[in-house]
Amino acid sequence: MPLVTLNLRKGRSPDVRRAMADAVHAALVANLAIPESDRFQLIREYDDADYIHTDAHLDLTYSRDLVMLEVAFIEGRSDEIKKALIADLAARLTAAVGLRPDDLFITFTEVGRANVSFGKGLAQRAL
Image 1 (cartoon, rainbow, N blue to C red):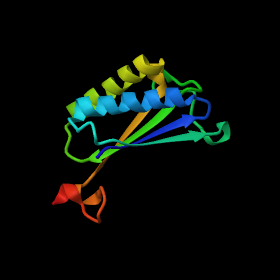
Image 2 (cartoon, one colour):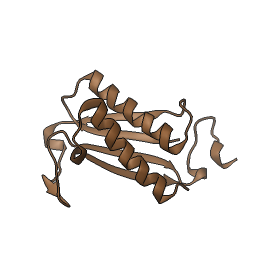
Image 3 (tube, rainbow, N blue to C red):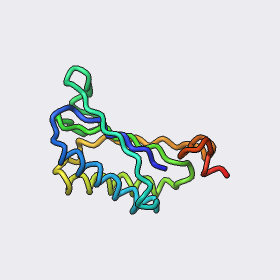
Image 4 (cartoon, one colour):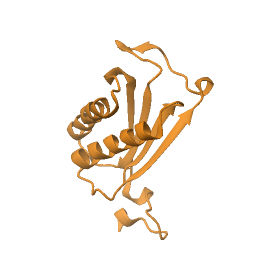
């Protein structure tokens, strides 16, 4: 069920955006044990005026390439799994598109099983 939103500053090519999406999906499949077919992703691009972030925080430095990644998934994964996923996301995005590890800001949102429908007006994971 993961719903992925990649928030990016405008300017990356379609091939780079797809490589990023593919890297994120591969990390989710590997770490959350979801099926390959469980892929729901949005890529949102922003003008400079609408993409606002600090240049540095918590001993990290951010460039214009900062990616703000949001992943919503069904609750219940351990902190260890989430930490492993964070590390794998950073490694895969670095390998796929050369993203600096500092330039990846990640948030996870956990949702209850009854809060998701894949269609047909049913909460399939709550049945």
